[in-house]
Image (tube, rainbow, N blue to C red; front, side):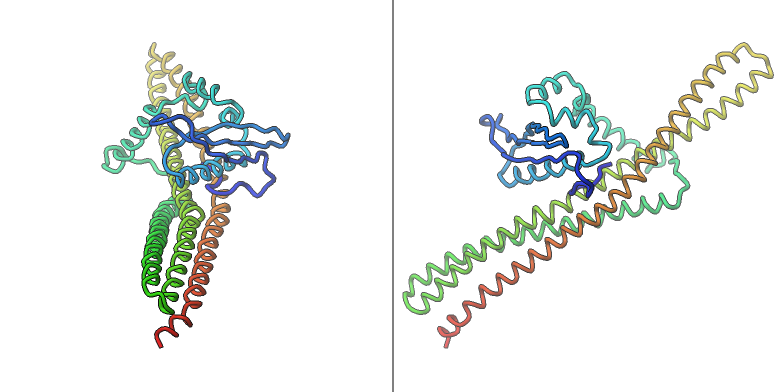
Length: 356
């Protein structure tokens, strides 16, 4: 689970990372965008790397910001910042990265096909439980059940908020475009009049074009500082759900092995009573099962421990990040409304004089 989708920890950073300088590389279908990733560690060592994306200028900027947030999120995490994969990404040049990718080592061990198969296996497992093909094994923990219900509801509410944030961005852009076209048309109308009315129309057209620019800027501000943070948290909650699924699987394996060990103990007692020659083999299998069971228990307990720690971190950071996002939304809307009101109000005396 990630520490937080948007902001680094409030503690002094171990690493600070900035993503900048998007540059087009190559031509045609082979073209891509290369970003410079500059890292400053406590020892003031600067590292750099690149990341590749295609698409529009807006998408390039969104990806630049997302990569900046993502890398800083990892670099500020007390455990993830020690990762060899992070060190590889930040330190090696692009040629070394390509060699690592071709050799399938480190962060490139799994191919996309492997990851897709894992995803399909998880889908199949979930389907089996839903359709009743496999009896689910649940933890009898009321607090954990409460947490799971909260996470599922949070995903729905965040997704709904993000959907409407997208519509707000779209509406601002469409209104901005309409105002721009209206402004041009009214200015042309003003040129036809050539008198006081024509001058008023020209000023009305000019104000419309100015407000169009304000709306377009606010649309971009909404996209980057409101919709994108909400989308980030939708993805973060989905990663928590993946961890919940992993925890459920670990618990299931832990329970199944515990039950298998009990049955094996019963079999061994029967073999002892009959002095069977199969006892030695059964004892070896029993010891192996006990080792597997102990490992399964350790894995489950580790997932529980890490999940408890990361949920606290997630909740604290969510409060900060969503507070900032909604503050930016309200501030932007207030400034836009003020600017719009002042622009139209300044025209009223001239338009009133023409109408009277």
